[in-house]
Amino acid sequence: MIKETILVLDFGGQYNQLIARRVRECNVYAEVKPYTMSLEEIKAMAPKGIIFTGGPNSVYDKKSPHYDKAIFELGIPILGICYGSQLMAYELGGEVATAPVSEYGHTEVTVDNSSVIFKNVSKVTTCWMSHTDYIAKAPEGFRITATTPVCPVAAMENAEKKLYATQFHPEVMHTKQGHEILHDFVYNVCGCKGDWKMDDFVKTSIEALREKIGTGKVLCALSGGVDSSVAAVLLSKAIGKQLTCVFVDHGLLRKNEGDEVEAVFGPKGNYELNFIRVNAADRFYAKLAGKTEPEEKRKIIGEEFIRIFEEEAKKIGAVDFLVQGTIYPDVIESGLGKSAVIKSHHNVGGLPSVVDFKEIIEPLRMLFKDEVRKAGLELGIPHNLVFRQPFPGPGLGVRIVGEVTADKVRIVQDADAIYREELARAGVDASLGQYFAALTNMRSVGVMGDFRTYDYAVALRAVLTSDFMTAEAAEIPWPVLSKVTNRIVNEVKGVNRVMYDCTSKPPSTIEFE
Ligand code: XMP
Image (cartoon, rainbow, N blue to C red):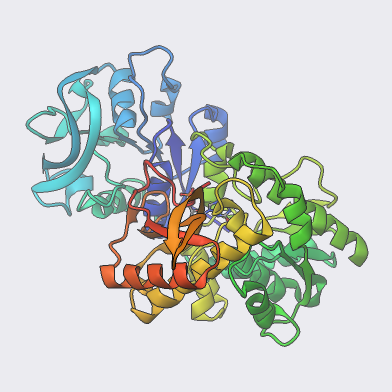
């Protein structure tokens, strides 16, 4: 299995996942763990290197996260980023102070190319800065390897002890040569060889799943989305007909999606597996009636899912394992890591405490989305399915603001189908990270013919994103938006207004709830 690991020790930075993804892009496995991980646990993990993330705190504040100084004596290479760099300086006797001017955004940094981590970087390079404190004086034994007009120590290192630090963020795309910096750290400082490859992952996962499951029966929660589809195919390759996939149509899917999923995975589809479709829309609508609080809605949908699986499992008899397509960002964002809980994700935070199965298997739990797609291609899953835009587990439940009703579902399904059709027709869909229609809970006055209307407003969303943790609103050509608007107000009963969501993430999120 995995031989080389880079440990990303999270001090509360918003880019913790990005750091891990960027390292994995270098074909080296990286895992995010909270800074509360003990020194003993780190020793047991034996990572090839450690990266300290940034964080919002000041190191001289006693309540801020710190780490046992003994970590610097383990002989494991460490790269401190932003807060992580200040922590290294502070703990090792340097000075950290409030910078005379905060640096935020694109910043020109002058580097010393004799440093191993800057040897493939231009002498003056653009980096992303985001700090109010800075290292005023490097600790003894360290040399300064980068500066800016504001920052006397934009990077420092003690090469002998394999300790490196950058005030800027190499993991962020805006740092032009960040990839080179991280690459050189993991290969030339940590000595990694690069053994994290998707073909290996698929092969070893199949073997490990076979061994773990033996002759057991497995039930898979299939939604038709990329994650659960890849998980299902991985399982079907490992254990064939021991696998039963249950597809719960919760009535919160996109228009016609239930039938599309059945066409691919059902008896007339491409794969060797037992397929059961449960049409449960009424059950979900009944549970959601009168519920308006987003987290409560998410929990209800997640819990009802599990109940239905339990029921199906009982019908099938003696099921040993439940498979879910949870992926790594879900795990981290649901607060199982250390970052703040923004939304409790379906299949993770929404799990009820009592589940009637021996064990839950999450074969993609450690993968980022782009890695899941690579695994999907490795497994021979059709390209259009692998590159399908993401769809949240709670489905339209989080795209209908406020109470969910069958009629609102119909409105948002029809509006969304028109939007998708027109974006595809205009050829702009492929460039978008995610796009959909949502139903605001706002009704307003309009006029249709000679009559007053009092109907809903549909919101259109389209974002550009590669990681789904940050996103920008996409510029959709006006004629396309205009056509979509006309079609929606004319063709979808109950809508008299269409709006375009111009917000980025942050401060918004991609989904409405
Ligand atoms: P947000 O709204 O948090 O969404 O900016 C980020 C990405 O996650 C998707 N999403 C989910 N995916 N289960 C999922 O599998 C969920 O509960 C869930 N909620 C949001 C969302 O569509 C976007 O791609």
